[in-house]
Every structure is written in structure tokens, then in C-alpha cells.
Amino acid sequence: MVNLARRHASACLEDVDRATYRTWLLYLAGSAVSFEEGLTSVAQLLLARRRSPRRRLSRTYMTARPPATRHSPGAVWAKRPRIPG
Image (tube, rainbow, N blue to C red; front, side, top):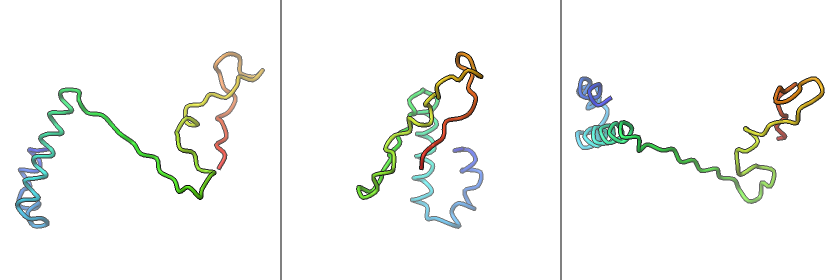
């Protein structure tokens, strides 16, 4: 990505000033090194207003397994879990 940004520097500089462009290059270079070293991680914030008690503050429903039915012995599932909402 850094090389791509450098190849298209003139197009980038049409939209932003040189300081912003150099900040982008620094960010892309740092991100590339972090990714190559395996240091990249993802953080996620789930926010909800307090007046909305129905909203979930976790994503556990996405990985919840429904109970097996007589038509699906073991871990075979008859249907996906219904997400209340």
C-alpha cells in the first residue's frame, strides 16, 4: 500500500496537503510492519443508549448453538437460532 500511495502521490496531493499525505504514508508503513510482525489486533466497541434496554451489549448470540433436535443428532442443526430483536 505504501508503494501504491507513492506511485499515486500526485493524485493524493490533489485532495490533501503534503503533511496529511506524509501522515498517511507513515500510518501505512507502520501498519504494514505491525501486520508482518503479527502485532495487529482488532478492538471493537459496542455502544448503546441506556434508555434502550433491548439492545445486547455482546455478540454471543452470533456463536450460540441451538440444542440438537431428534432430526439432527449430535451437532447437526435443523435450523439457525432466531435472533430476537
